[in-house]
Structure formats: C-alpha cells, structure tokens
Length: 209
Image (tube, rainbow, N blue to C red; front, top):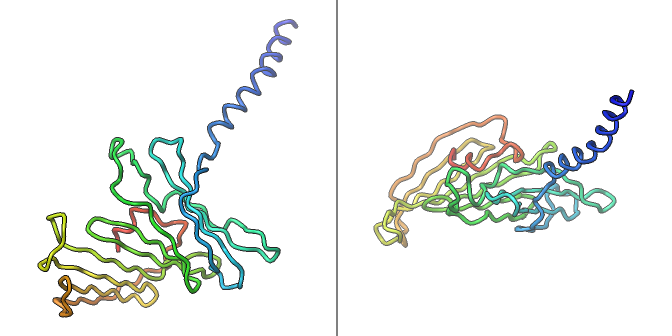
C-alpha cells in the first residue's frame, strides 16, 4: 500500500515538469519581425498584411512567412504560415556560414503578392495571386548574368527570363549591358498544373524556374 502511494505521488510531482519541458520544446521562437508589407491581396477593399519573422534562438536563423487577410470585422486572420519558402540565414549544410543572400523582399500591388529574392548572378521575382482560397504562383521573372569576374562590363551577357505560368509561355532573352540589340531569344511552352501554392513552395524551388 505504501509503495502504491509513493508511486502516485511521484507521478503527480513529476507531471508538471514533464509538461513544462514539452512546452519549452514546442515554443515558437519566430518573434523578431524582419519584413512588413500591407495591401489588398484578395480584392475585398480591406488591408491585408504580410510579415516575415526570424527565430533568433535557432543558430541557423530560420525565417517564417505569414500572410494575414482582413475579416469583415476588421480583424486579421492568418491565411498562410510557412518556414519553407525562405532559406535560413545560416543553413546547416554551410556549417555556420551565411547563405550569401539578403532576406527576400515582399511587395503588394494590384492584388499581387511579389517575392523578390537574390540568386547567384542575379535576382528572381515570384508573383502570387489569391485564387480559390490559395495564393498560387502565376508568374516568374529572372535576371542573371554570366560574369565570373565579380563585376559586369560591356562583354557581360544578361539573360532575362519571363515565365507566365497561366499561359505556360517561357521566354529567355540575351543581351549585353547598355545594348539595345537582342543577342538571342528563346521561347517554349511549359505547362505546370496545378499551379504551385505558396504554402507548398520551398526556397530551393526557385532554381526550377
């Protein structure tokens, strides 16, 4: 009888500690705001909000994108939350080194959410449109150059890529710095169905376009 009572007491006193440790592990440390953008995303005449937060406790410095849509009562409702779309600042595979790029910028214009990211040798922008309850990728624009010298000159070739995911038309145009003459132009049709959703988009996906 005494052993049973002792066992019950041990459970009662240890349970709060167990629960507390579980709470510590699941605590959300994305509490430092990095990006803040406002605009009408779902064309209801109300102001929506886009936020990017950083986790400063995790040594990789991961980032979270959150999209809030305005409700009829004026309050903001969380529509999207993703930690996959932005690369951590210090990825594990780089062994503590910076990923080499700035944190993406976000813009809202004419109901379109645009994410602009740096990539090797240039930059890339993704346009997402709110359709059927999701933010779908509708257009990608990329600008890169072939310079290996660390700077660009009149011999550097710039390639501009425009990919309309709705029509499937993907166009690549090559030219030189300051030249109005097109060196080469390539077109092809690439249909992606269904259109990628922002909550499924990973930062590594940008190299697919």
